[in-house]
Image (cartoon, rainbow, N blue to C red; front, side, top):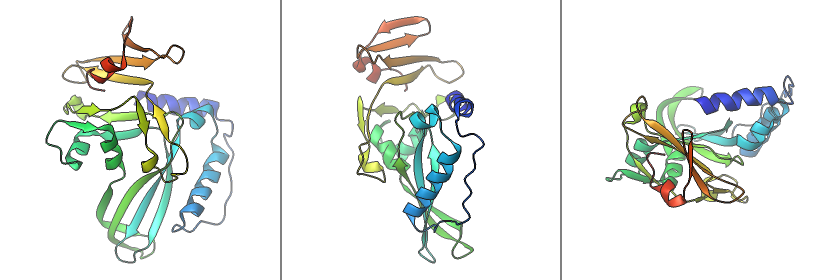
Length: 231
């Protein structure tokens, strides 16, 4: 909640296009992804431009398919954090053990959801609809929230590497979507009210990992990062 607030607050303060308004009298065909995407990008970027949007904001596309008329519509949106509910990811992958892999989270993110009664703009009626969210373009700095539920009740282990390649999960696979882990926040304790948070950050100058435990900073390693608490 804090980082969402901070990003939005900083963007509002640094936005160089505040108050601009691009007038477009012609709505794009919702079936045409390229038209919908370009229309959204042009409108959004005409009103929003800051170092925050350039660094932390990406785009996703919600694809809806009506079972009655079979028409497909696209809805492009912005995001600055990917939220992965770990317990739901574990159930989605049918794991018996109490762990998930980081790529399982991206599988869950683009899973197909079924809505028994969803309003179709073509049929003008509530119909059975299939919906899927796909990443269109991801930010330079990608923030991932591993949601463990209220009170941190889902103690699910997350398996991850120091590098992340998500090309197969992005709409535009012609580009490179390759990330290197630079920071992680871990929770220690039984719940979010009585636990303790420790941060691990990678120094861009010497390439070393450091552990930030309140006022105490110590040299760390990626192995310790992998074995630490609940990220």
